[in-house]
Image (tube, rainbow, N blue to C red):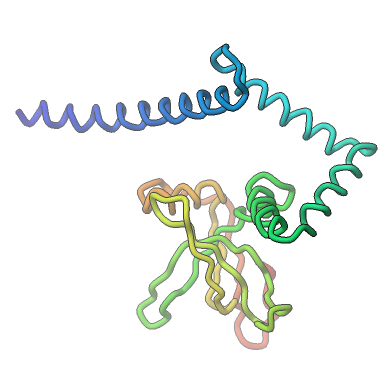
Length: 200
């Protein structure tokens, strides 16, 4: 009986992730196909990917790049639309843009007395423009969720993690179950008195 139970749970570890992944992929394909109104399964998805690649090529071209910059400027000036567009644009840029926002995992000391710490991502090196000198912004994704919290903390409480951004994100989202591999040596963020502070 114990052997059957063990096999059952081991089967769950293989079955559930595989089935859910396939189900999500199929749902995405069907949703995109429905939007495009194409009768061939997967045709809408391929058409969307092709369209995105073409737009990316045009946005990279010196001649047509200016047109996309004008469109971007218009969206950022329209009332209400600019709030939605800017938020989506900034989040997209953080994941796939040139200036990725989740490539700097850090360890933040929440309580110096108990040593309680939290893993997050440094998103802003300085908040002096907001009247908060010596502070940085750190984003904390939530485990088993697609949401998170942004906290403003003193720079001295933030230390870089010697890990890749993708590994740190997987570690957080999985609730600490995923392995957090060491990638590069971490640099100090809070230098002792009298010593210059290194850039995070």
